[in-house]
Length: 160
Image (tube, rainbow, N blue to C red):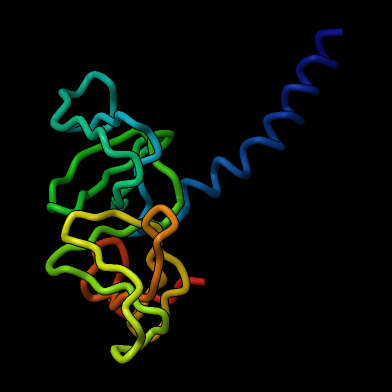
C-alpha cells in the first residue's frame, strides 16, 4: 500500500513540475501587469523582506526583470524596482500613457480619424502592435496609438 502511494505521488509531481519549471525559464525581461487590487513590492524575494511600495491599481503595467522561485523582480513605470509574488501578476498586456495626450485613431497611421484621447497616466490593454502602432483599449474606448508614447511595450515589439 505504501509503495502505491509513493508511486502515485511521483506521477502527480511529474505532471505538475514541467509547467512550474517552464514558468521559471521564461526569458527576462518581459512585460506583465498587476492582477491584484493591492500588491506589495518588497526589497527582496520573500515575505520577511520589508515592503517598499503598496500598489492599489490593478492593471498597472510592470516589467519583470528577474525570477527567483515564486518571486518576480519588477520595475514599475516610474523606474522603481523591487520584488513581488508572481501570483500578484498576470500576463495580460497593459500600457500607460507617459508623455502627452494620446490620440486613439481608427487606423494605425497619423492621418487616421481620432476616436478618443487619453491623458498621461491612463492605463489600457494593448494588442495588435506592429510598425510602431498598438491597439489601445481603455474600458471599451479604443483605437490605434503610437507605441512610443506608451510604457509597457518595447520599441519595435510585435504583439498579436
